[in-house]
Image 1 (cartoon, helix red, strand yellow):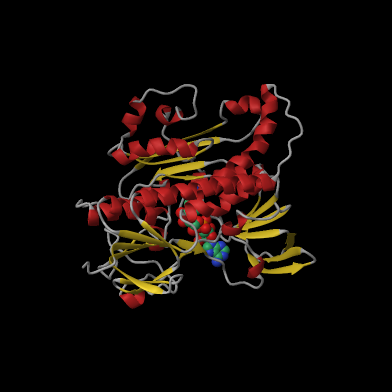
Image 2 (cartoon, rainbow, N blue to C red):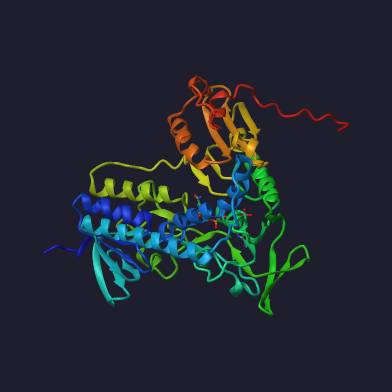
Length: 460
Ligand code: NDP
């Protein structure tokens, strides 16, 4: 008789957990996966996928306006929030079904229950009120929105609720300066909501290239987002059906909805991990080694719960690498050093590799090539939106260390550019690539002038 009920028990059926479970089962392991909400996890159910659908919806307002320059007369345009929500929900249901079917096809048993760790080989299932045992346990429970403890915070929503609002608010205040805050500020603004975004520091998108941060803030202001830096909410009060926000700058403003996008915390509370010998970091994240193994050798963890790089494709790669290493007889580690990523802000941004500031912190000289221009489409559309491209290059080796883009399709472009950067391409190899004309992307292979910092005279 087998020593354990399963070879592998996965807790959490999000991007990382599902990939690990499927691949482990394909390698012949007996696998079960527990999910307390819906199979698909944050990305599919209330993250990347519905967010991108909302981004598409919010672009139409600009597109209708820009059509006039190309000779179109667009009739009265009206937006119906309920239709968007219903269509989005239908698509999420479809994807949820595909995820379930793929797990079943691979022979993975799905358990609809919250699961907690009882010891290094035992998991307790809430719904069935029973223990099951496994040779190995994989923690892939993701993270949950963090809300600061201020008076009236119970009146605020997070991105979780933003996907299910009964009505589109007339006014909204988005708090935070990371991916989620800029993306949702753009979504609401594009859908016609009077949008304010508050960020507690001097300039949002901390950690991204400084040029991108500056330009995004300028473009968002031009599009009508009331962007306020060095500003936060002190308290929220509900009065006469409105929310009254007291701000750190002394202002009091009224709005219909407040959405916090102030980071996420790993879902490790009450999971029984420390009792089982797993070490957690200061923020509650699971500490793992390069093979996603925790301090308890039979317990592994992948994805946002480990707080390495909190992105869906990274969680998928970590889950796949774990399954290949442990069940497929291959030694696979995930390289977290170069990760291309897109921010579906408006305008969109794409980035890979080192920022200029990060490159300058390293020994050796850095060459920078950059350009900002109005894309061809905007000569007729009337849009004043700028496209921006920047290459950060190691002056000695000519290697392209980082690429930073802002403008339409930056997400699509950065995926392709990411291949070149991951391969260690040099600027000369970028230059040797024949341009595709007329595109914005051709600037990536035609940038010849090194950017020189403007000389500031003492008298200026
Ligand atoms: P981020 O960690 O990106 O940003 C959090 C923001 O909230 C920061 O601007 C931070 O400010 C601010 N903040 C933190 N605590 C407070 C506080 N107490 N009061 C006021 N402001 C605060 O988190 P997000 O929630 O935007 O996104 C979560 C994760 O989801 C990210 O790690 C990202 O990787 C992922 N994601 C990826 C997307 C994509 O790939 N396109 C899209 C959406 C999410 P400060 O800078 O000062 O610390």
